[in-house]
Image 1 (cartoon, rainbow, N blue to C red):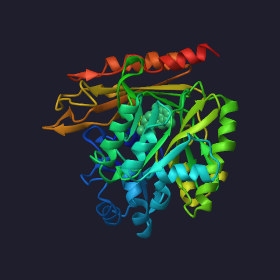
Image 2: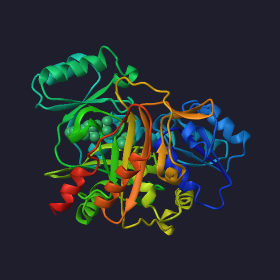
Image 3: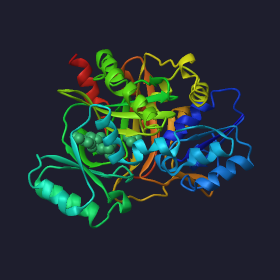
Length: 423
Ligand code: AMP
Ligand code: GLY
């Protein structure tokens, strides 16, 4: 069986490694992938956003199954194109991917169907947004409507900061058309939990919960990044909370999308905040999270391709999705200076005996050598009986990987460990 994975990051590498476990898989292509995946997939230099070329590649190479991982091609309609060409796919069609592609859509959906989320207002002109901010409660949260490389959310601690954010989005167009409309919403507090789920539009099966570490520096300081590490399961997410989320968020969301004629099939990611007033949705993503996938999939005991195909065939309710009772920790190794300015092109050494635990995000092959080629270079994941052991093991693995300018957070999982001890 020939499988195609669209995307190039650590998340895609984790998906590829898991798919490889299925004996029916004979070949895996990554579009475009990266040099650090070359042992696991054939990387072909086609941009994930060039969805017409992606679909043509799939046809020309008689791909049996395609997995579209990143948000951009999903929102652009990669799955629609592939399916229309008769290729079985994992991922939502564009009319459902809008749940991530437009914050205005997702907020209005939640309001219409009573799904708990922060109170909000939508604005499509600068003057009314600025007027609203004169009396809005501070801190406040400003969100660009469309995709903005994960940077479209600004938490403003003062009225001035809020106004600046609105001007930069609506007038200066720092996120282009993504800032034509904005959402201004209530600032919520509480621990954050990421819950990825499989859904075929009829059944929703949450995966093991996880916790991202978005800030660049230890103790959640510094700039927001694409994610500096993850742990799973998330100790804040108790069985009781999970049950409540199923009832008040997960099932209502799947049903709401069906009622809107936008059935969601694929991985629906619930970004949740456990507020004093119960769990609320911070954001939906129409895809696997990065780097959540790098801790969630290593704990999946069922065969990933089988589960994905059940989503495609709408037979998820008959398919077992089993997770290990162990814990996982992923530490991201980045280039010093990320997420702002960093050098690349340094030789990267990953000992062969640990390469199965390493998910490469930003590397390429140059003159036969693997060199760094991005801000986030790789993630290394350890699995062990307890969270504490998984964290220790992940940091031991980090010591075996070398490149100039490597930087990583030293406290991935520390907050989760404290939460566990407090229980
Ligand atoms: P996002 O880019 O949508 O993942 O949002 C980035 C981060 O902003 C989230 O992970 C939260 O930490 C924070 N955030 C988003 N919305 C809110 C909110 N309403 N209240 C507090 N924090 C928020
Ligand atoms: N880790 C957050 C995301 O994938 O959006």
